[in-house]
Length: 449
Image (cartoon, rainbow, N blue to C red; front, side):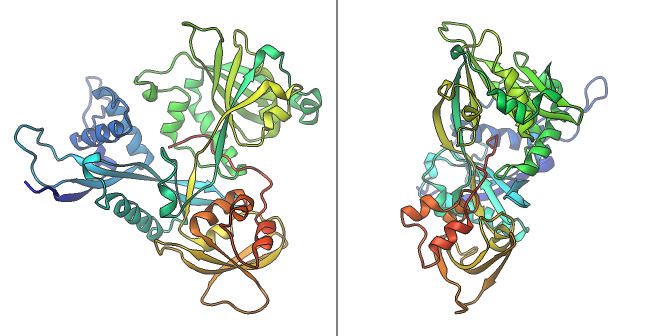
């Protein structure tokens, strides 16, 4: 047997995830995962040390992934395995992708979301990861996606493929024992008294959550449109992340509603009562599209009974703490990157954000993968951006900066200050770049994938 076992590529998508349609005794369609999907699901989940779940659970995963438009690609072992091992051809490299949209600031662009990336330990250092990502990005670019995005389990891998961090999330711990309150002037300024908060069963509000997510996505830079199956899991309509096909019945929900309709939704879980000195609640999900909705809802959620502390994820900047009478009641307990973005169409990306000031500059974009490297001219006038790819410097008094495509992806969402401080943006137009790419609103995405 060869020490370098041959591989064969595979693609699994759409109806490949499920067996041909079957029905139960009442005539309802009963979806069963295909054998190919089951093997793939098990390999992907175990690659992240996660229990793949029961057969019934995998059936639901197959339906959800099909409905999201998820496509899997990768490599399987091409040769039969030794007689004493299972005979199915094991996936040894996997990558998944699905369509969505990403808010860049002034426009929402199509984005190809990449997930389930992994290479078996038995097949490392054979170029499998590079080949899979290169082919996935090339395919997305050819299909017209200006952006690709992913969330990562390891931070040191994806910058080499041109991905830059576009959003962070901070976990805040709110100490309710300090008698926390929102500032009255905040509630008055935002006119929160025009709305009311209702307690609800969140598992029944997937349609409402879809509506709020769409509205939030329209006004939140860095946000990604949440696929409905992820919405179902976040609200507990199914509890696949908890290893159950049943609804997550321990969740509580709260909705802030005005005469204009719902403006905010929160889903609350509790960490349990066994061996507990501190009763901890978790704001598992929070969706809002107005500042009034956020403040009106939090004014209720911050006063839940039988909860000593609340865990909550938000963008950097301590917006909640700033709105409170005692900002020390909110402590940042962790911060991590969430969304990494890859530019596949620099012109479309540059023309889809807001800019701190008018001006012109040339960007010399370096891309080791060769997808978007080159010179780009950016002109911003009266807040409107126009970009074009150019063949050579135009020598008309417009200075240039040089930066890697990964760092441009970061600056697109987060500005370039930190990058310039450590020498990752260079050239005579650096100061102009920093002023133009200044960010007013912190980008944020409220889910991983």
